[in-house]
Length: 131
Image (cartoon, rainbow, N blue to C red; front, side, top):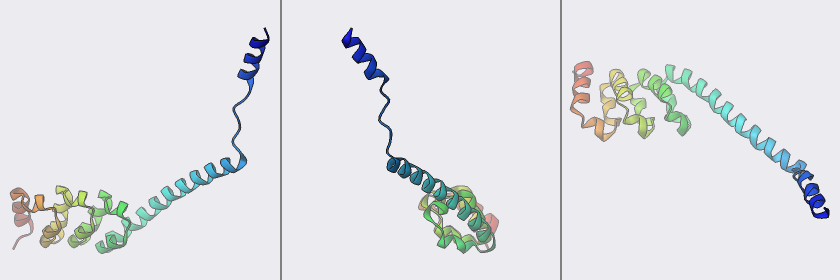
């Protein structure tokens, strides 16, 4: 009976609580993460408007935003040469590259080697924008 009572008492003991310091650290980490996310979102919106006016604004943006397809599309529509600042993943993206070449056919030089060697891409650039 004594063993059963001891086992029951052990089960009823609550988990050790976090210290106030540990709780504060978790709150700080969560707040920092949220602020960083909100900050990047706000930065994205500002950059999106900036690249609509000046495509080269992409040059001074964070790496994450250079990989944001919507931002890069707006930049290359305004200035095809902004493709040079796009992430490698977007320099392989046919839609992004063709949009850049509509603004400036010479932007093709900043596309991935695969797209520069793709006959259908080159023909589309020549048809659209070549002289």
